[in-house]
Length: 218
Image 1: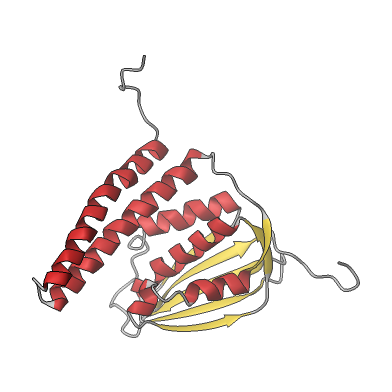
Image 2 (image 1 turned 60 degrees about the vertical axis):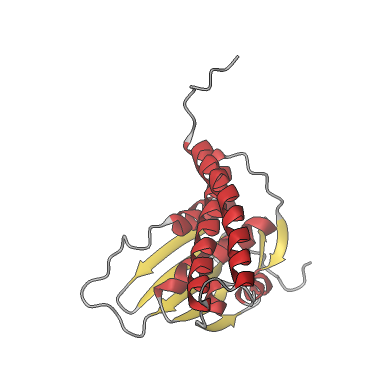
């Protein structure tokens, strides 16, 4: 019989934190809906509370996903997917934070097929856009092929209209969302690079398992 005192892993701790946050998030969401129906608070205050609740909900989801990734037992289904279509689909999500905030988005997407797990790909794309969006006023998303080696390369750049004074702080984006990007990419075998400058913040995702269409072959 276990006495419950055995040390838990970091993965188990992350999952426990995320799971513990879920019930209060549900309770707060119900109370917030009731406050809206009763018009007990000004709309601006209700919007602020809802935004804060959404951030807590995101932390809960990210923590649970990080726990599953760090545990190393995540099952993957390797499928051929159109990366350009998946990228555009995520960018156009109506409830995405970058769309609700009115963030300008410009994309240049070449057709690129990759072999990855569908769920992990969508999770990584959502995390990448969600992490980059608060770093600037406009998102530039570019997808193409790297010359050597011939890998699909997705670049997400957040442009700053008013760059901060002084040297950029390379440490400032190291939050939970960034860790989710790194661990998801590692599980998929995708290389991640980050660049922080006063003018922009950029994330590059390189896909080694890119499908090459050779003439005369299927």
